[in-house]
Image (cartoon, rainbow, N blue to C red; front, side, top):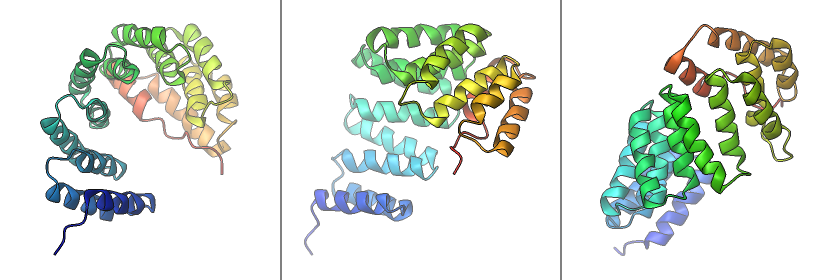
Length: 241
């Protein structure tokens, strides 16, 4: 029986994934890897699919397999770093992003990822060094500015963080998540009224009240526990239907 070309398998897998059938897409990507073991695309897309399905441990293994075949694959390094953050392994994520930065010192994703990794470990001042390095290269990056603002808030620099995140949140392209990050920083600063006002831009009133309760809880935490709860545990950030 003739083996299907890898391009055909990848196309079918991508269509299957786009339809929302992640499990079947993963099966097809695995099959493509079995048939074409030296090609990295099936493994890379398998990792992305597994991440979308919440299978982060398996996704990390897929990205590591890509790097076994192609050690300097920047995309795989970036995705592995992000996956390790999802797994709550900021130290290993930092090491991965650092390798990417060594390959490409101007890689914004690497610098941003190093900052996020340090923030997740509670090292906010060190994280801000990397964010500022990234902003020197891409001053308009909302993602980096957003992360710098959150880092500043977690370091107790509430006024500076609010000023920065106001600019991000009022940008025409700002997302609900970015606006709710401003609400989060108001909450960390203890300004529930301002947090609620921003929250209501995108959220229902029950969601706003839920977030306000969460912000109060965050104020009882400190260090890495506070950083991880703030950066990964915000309960509501989706727009009102």
